[in-house]
View 1 (cartoon, rainbow, N blue to C red):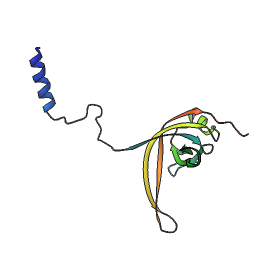
View 2: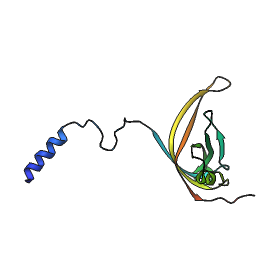
View 3: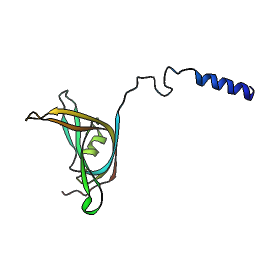
Amino acid sequence: MSFLARRVTAATASATPRLSQAFSASARRDIAKITLVGNLAATPEIKPTSTGKSVVEYAVASNSGRGDKQTTSWFRVSSFVEEGPRRDYMTSLPKGSTVFVEGDAVMNTYNDAEGKTRSALSIYQRNFEVLRRGTSSE
């Protein structure tokens, strides 16, 4: 095929609208992603859900700034890790372990006991890595 024929073919191909995305056959879904690097506030805990499954919940503290201007942000994370060695390892991590967490962020609003509208950021873990294991105080 000649150079001119390739240009014409490419131009007509790009002029036709695409009906689907090349990388996904499913419908588009907007999700907010978040990446955290911080220290575990406490050992992760296993809690039951209303459906009979269990969820691993933990908090991550992340510091920003220096000296007197240093602030700490706290993030609550939920993980639906299946029962097994991976979950056992997560729940054995001591407070102070430095972790890397990637997850989906969802903002929830609710009314508290006083009737005030509150907001809470929920993070659902997708990826988890231990960067430094904390020292156990046992």
